[in-house]
Length: 165
Image (tube, one colour):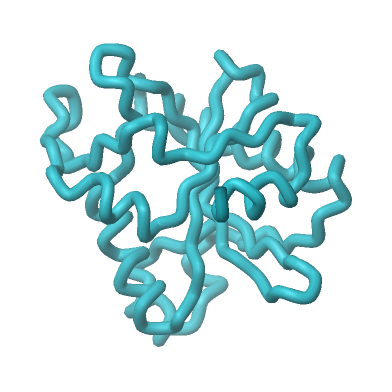
């Protein structure tokens, strides 16, 4: 897959996630991804990377969500998450006391299922990083059972109820 194909699939995932949020009347802010829109101090702390959405949760606060297009490694039953990105997000999360989550989907799910995982669980689960034979980049193989599955018909209530079960 080329870089442009990856970018297109990422944009499609973000668009489909936005549709899901709108369908469930979930308030959010979509974060513009152009680096010029951030202050110098944030650029230094974010290293040019930031989550895609700030999802606002009434009577709770908010969580940041980075939406990803990912497919499962059927051989290992894991989803590959970018190790460098997760490390930068982890630093950002600690420094500013933010909650960052990943939400992933793909066309095999028809973008009708979202797999959610908090960054902290990604960091714990992906302790053993791997190097991609295709790209040569470090990734964290996160087991499928670490994600909370949310169907198109589900609301955010399911996400929070699964956290405590």
